[in-house]
Length: 252
Image 1 (cartoon, rainbow, N blue to C red):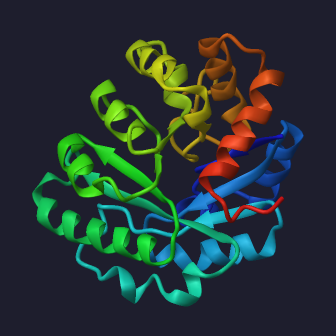
Image 2 (image 1 turned 30 degrees about the vertical axis):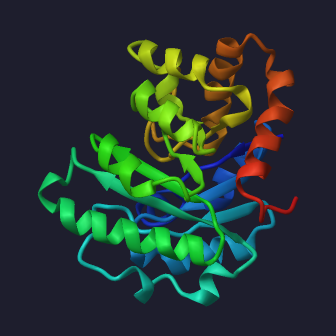
């Protein structure tokens, strides 16, 4: 059994895709557990509804750095964070590629959500794009979680490894021009790796150009297995255990 640790099942995805078909397609490929993050604060109620309705779906609740100008605590409450199906805070972080003009607002939102995660003892799912130094500085040494869709440098990987973080490989690791990312994942210990699709984005080879679905996470698993010199069957229980170690509220 595989877990897609980060697939967006709310917002635009839900408008354009049949969720039950998505779940069935994933199960047919051996992807039986899905973790749905939020990015837009308006999607939070929908994500919780989906997770509450399906035994095999969990969610992480967070506000993406592109949605600055809001107060996290207005959307992310105690009731939400203590829900058994809410297993983390994410995706949160910094994006200086798409939103460089809002750096200070991003940092404020990031820090507020990190404090919520610490208050409720939840791991965080971190988005970091062209913001490595600030990401590392703000996370400090007292946060815990996963570097979502990790494509950053070995420096950031090593820094966050030393702080106990996990690293999520997405479909990007299958791309022809992603050799540097594959080399980074070769160095990351096997017991710190999880996998994701980031659906509906980043469809892996051989599905590039198509809408990404959780079922496609198997292609990422195949590349991770190859990098680590394992069979897919050997990798499967390791990824499962890693995910449970990361998200301790998961009950299967």
